[in-house]
Image (tube, rainbow, N blue to C red):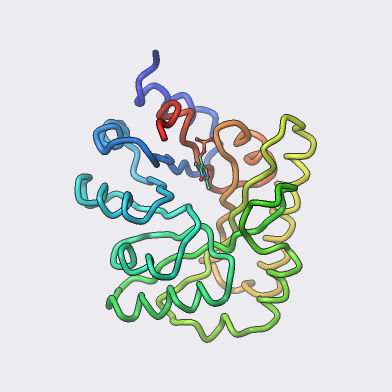
Amino acid sequence: MMSVAENLRAVRATLPRGVRLLAVSKFHPAGVLQEAYDAGQRLFGESRVQELAAKRELLPADVEWHFIGHLQTNKIKYMIPFVHTIHAVDSLKLLSEIGRQAEKAGRTEPVRVLLQLHVAREETKFGFTPDECRAMLEGGAWRSVSPLVRLAGVMAMASNVDDTAQIRAEFREVAAFFREAKSRFFAGDAEFREISMGMSHDYPIAVEEGSTMVRVGTRIFGERAY
Ligand SMILES: *Cc1c(COP(=O)(O)O)cnc(C)c1O
């Protein structure tokens, strides 16, 4: 069996320059995250707020914590003082509430937020459809959300299927939407630059289609014990 350090090295070796690796460590104990940290990993992604907050206490302070799960407004407060990026924001209401909580917590650095797009065929996935996201951006109300929230790009999951042509088409749609949003709403904004897409089974396709950050769990840490 390969070690976490070996897995990390193998995944990193496949990533072109400019594509960052988010190690998705949900459901794995802090000791395993520490192994990855010792192998140089600094970006970690978690999908449950309490788990993220607990692990943060156990890992070195220079870890960059990313929240990748579905976020309920009543949980924001447990991570808002320290979370670096929130990947899956899919409503203006959630965006505003993150801003409100960031103000309340007295953050000094803005929290980065990615707009979650729903491009997969599955019904259960969260996220804006591209049309909904476009309408939200056109509405303009997001411009009056706290300056402690920085819209930093988009995030998506492809359908969980074997059909790589479908997966590729979905990732391509995300990248196209990103380019449209960039030129229409964020042209002068260097912070809006992230396309978070690609997981263990499909990240090579995501990278080919323009991902700037892949979210890889199983390929690094093995299967999760739920
Ligand atoms: C769990 C999860 C991942 C990582 O999945 P793996 O298949 O283990 O690589 C990536 N993104 C999101 C949003 C997740 O919930």
